[in-house]
Image (cartoon, rainbow, N blue to C red; front, side):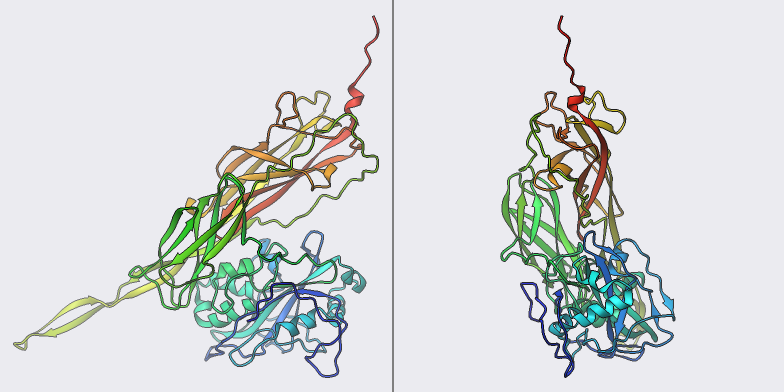
Length: 568
């Protein structure tokens, strides 16, 4: 599979899927693909090549929020009694939508111009170029606009983008089913692995790899691992089975040679990789994965995985206190790893605090900026394989040299697998309020020029052992006078733990060394809203982060508290 390093710019003239069919091509696709070598199944578990489709959801670019009910496009006519999960996007499931199986009532659209093949098989390969050409075309944009009721001009303006998810139609245990890659992973978790055991080549390889991101977007990462082997449910849910089409202002291309991971200085982090195996790993022959980091080694032992399976493995370590680039080496004594070398960039956030506002500062042309709405990761889930012995006692007869028969009971059992599911979620609250030294403040109303406080409470809830997670360790506050960029302030962790407290670092310009940020004297009478990122709550499935915003009302300025003393 050809792995693109740069975002594909959709072609302008022709789509070669059908003769004499031409498309204008205004979009840009963040889509790649993989897979291959798929068996089609037999009996009551079968998938036929070509039985596929795409779920399309319109996403508002400013806040990455879905603004349409997803539409399923396919060339086939699904069975009337097909089992499906309604119309929920990958983002909807990330936002805690439940997986709701239902029979019948499935609605889809068969375009007048057929969509290209989406899922590869052992005999027929899908073309990612054809997929991009189709869904980046003017025809596809008009189709989506008509089906969703969103104005075509608005759709093309750059205000929206399209989330694409591959769909497979197949038979599972005798039942006709329809599901996206994310739904397949979630359903397999409900079934305890039964879907993967019967249809894994489809549901856990070719379907999720039918579309993957070339660069991070919508809070989902670009996929950097292998595309030719099966993946686990956590990997599918967190990273696979999606593509994105933009019509304007595409994101910048990834930098060649960029770090694989970015961490903050002096922070406890979790670095994961995926271990896959063709032959089973049991307690009799478990795997051991070793991470070598800055002269130290971290080992995860007694790893068990069924044949053809995979699992996330990780190490928990603390980053150095100074900015630098760290190379992490990973090795395993069994199976294959998704990464054996990881480049981690360690950065120091405390490099750009705001300058001290002064009485002479002015900004006569200032206009209030919109409060940002950046991607957040509220929760994550992952699974760990566990192995247990299932006994099967068999009476075994023996005959001695004298012809006497005797027997013994022999345990002819075998190792069985189950998985433990873990999850973690991050929530945060944090009022912005006038500092106690702003003596003329009244509740949340204060004069500009005085200081404000930001007190964050960050709570991590998890059912996992401590070795799987960290608590929220860092927070960064952004301010409206800098349009929520350029300058920022770090918060100190006052109380550590899964219910952490963070406050602004002491301000070096404060006479009393207060934990404040000074509002500029020129700020207009309006809501002064802060925007704080709470982050570095790490799990094997990635980092959790949330944003907290709150405000104080500015009315008048510090100059209104001045007065001229009368002469005596």
